[in-house]
Amino acid sequence: GAVVSQHPSWVICKSGTSVKIECRSLDFQATTMFWYRQFPKQSLMLMATSNEGSKATYEQGVEKDKFLINHASLTLSTLTVTSAHPEDSSFYICSAMGSGNTIYFGEGSWLTVV
Amino acid sequence: AQSVTQPDIHITVSEGASLELRCNYSYGATPYLFWYVQSPGQGLQLLLKYFSGDTLVQGIKGFEAEFKRSQSSFNLRKPSVHWSDAAEYFCAVGMDSNYQLIWGAGTKLIIKP
Image 1 (cartoon, rainbow over the protein chains, first blue to last red):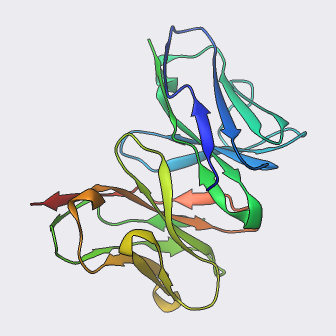
Image 2 (image 1 turned 135 degrees about the horizontal axis):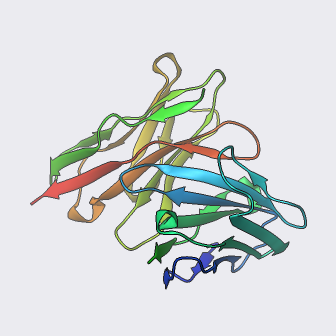
């Protein structure tokens, strides 16, 4: 079946640094990928919709300059958290739309900013 | 504004007992409806989805869900739970063809031996 891989699964970074999370569709092409953030004891929150070859569409309240999304190919989207702060610590999940508009989720990435 | 409500933060069920997880949504038109499960240390997995047609949807792992338009609900059911069903379950609603999803807060399922 279709697989979406996220890397890294766990990352710890220092406050003020930037960290990149990759989302890859391993056996299918995904023109559309989504990035979510999950706060503790809360539901997933859609951050942005990423379309291959174009700028991402961000949800209201999500800082574009802080959460940089790049979807340079049909199998890879990246989320870069710039100048990370402890409040950015969270669980980030990507999903990719495959054939038949079926959505497949990555395993998520835990970000801890210290 | 569109919203998804899962009224139960956690539910405890004995192994072998039946299960029903509630999901209500607020949306003017007929949405696309999904149930996902997130097991510890694993990613989200789609259990089932409803787009149109038969309102009783069968999913994987013995789960089913019924779309009730009059109640704006899409409750998830399983006749007999197994210890491996312990996980967090999320109901999600898609509103348009782009399949952006609005998520419920999740219900944590605890299985008693």
